[in-house]
Image 1 (cartoon, rainbow, N blue to C red):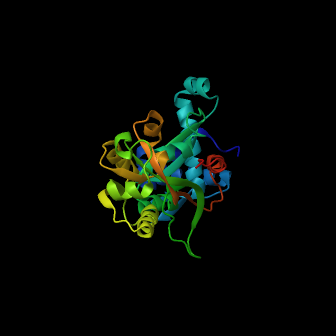
Image 2: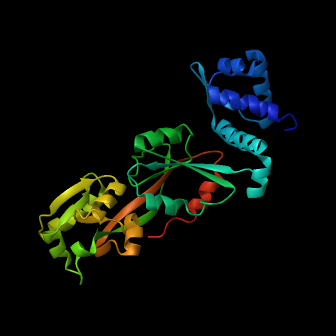
Image 3: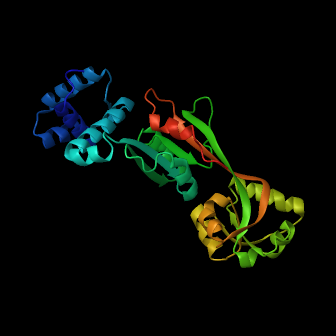
Length: 294
């Protein structure tokens, strides 16, 4: 480890950012052979390969991704040492989280709450489709994916899927629409327009089964696969919404919305998706040890 120094890390970071030895050598004004020799020295010092070649590009290995995280932290510290020391006394660690774009923002905040505001932690949150996020996970650009739809898994699947929370669903709307005192569930479902999750969701499947059992044909005012849109439609008094209360937690706290009925047996299930790694991010273990409460 004695040969590890800032010069090696600076060269390594340049290659990681450029993705090619040729481009990095040009930027650094070095020969490719000299740059290659320096990187081999760094890899020997760390005991791991930092890159793998894919066509003409150099792609970070798992060890390379971890090394880049530390290199970035080191150079951030070097750029603003005094401020960093005042704030946290050491370098910040990063956790990269991918969240399904349609997932409740309130749930995401609750999941990340143990780390939010910590001076030694940087949370990088990215949203997208589940397919995009899983590609990012496999490329080691993400440490974990948050989703309410567990990806398909078989013996060849690389994914580790953990169920972290079951959030009960309710029938929620404005006080004027929900009514006071509380009205019977069957009456609410029969008389009021409804805002529902889209048919491919587990929550909608549970709701459809409920209306069949009750012999009710619901008046569907709107459907959405995005929890944020369901929240806005409910606030706009388009109808009563079938959603977990955590989605509209702030509105329930202020009385802008109320829970007209609890939908027994209907829950929104949240999962984390990770990969088996030799070097797991220790911050992730802290989050999984304290999942959001129902």
